[in-house]
Amino acid sequence: MNDLNKDKSLDFENALLNFDRVHAEQILEGALSENNAFEVIDEIVSPALTRIGTAWDTGEIALSQNYMAGRIAEQLMDEILPAESPERIDYPKIAITTLGDYHMLGKKVVTSMLRSTGHSIKEYGNMDLDKLVEKLDEDGIDLLLTSTLMLNIALKINELKKRMDKKELKTKVIAGGAPFLFDDMLYREVGADHMARTSSDVYKLIDQYKEEVHQ
Image 1 (cartoon, rainbow, N blue to C red):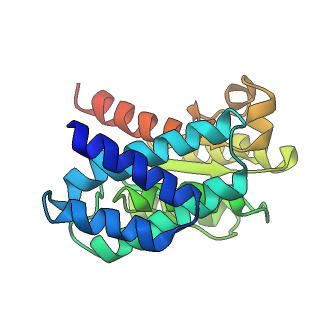
Image 2 (cartoon, rainbow, N blue to C red; image 1 turned 135 degrees about the horizontal axis):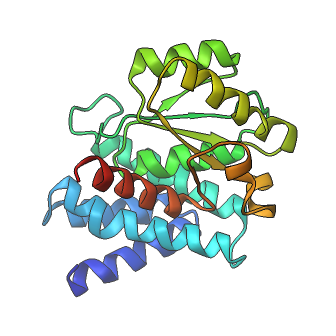
């Protein structure tokens, strides 16, 4: 990243944290006059959102700031790359579910963050485990993100994995949400493949998946 884009990324971050959509949009418009969309995403948007996610993880900002920053960035990214744009990053194929948990904020944060960095992601609503397994198979999902607030819901991953194994699905399950923050080993106990503490962890796991597949 050149110094100019680093400065723009920091300015973009500040605009998001101040909920200043107009200024954030101006920064991206200026950057797009000199770079293509993916350079803007890689060098300005993604680093800013990664720093914001880390700041939330360390308690420097509130979850509401993290969420609103992601929403504003998602809206701006939809202007650059519409939801159905063929330029959207569609590999690996990603989906997200709350497994029936009605606390949706974590799911919305992660979805916004991924879409704001150009990724396609399918949102699965509240469906029973059999239907969820059918959708994973039908859509050819590579990575399933789970976002739960309640422990009893998080424990459903165990049953989900059993049904996925019975169907011989290769989908990797990434666990996230409050129960997994309180217990670092819980994701192993419920049979998830990985745990993501923050949205930036999700980016790392996506990159890790790509590397593993192409080894």
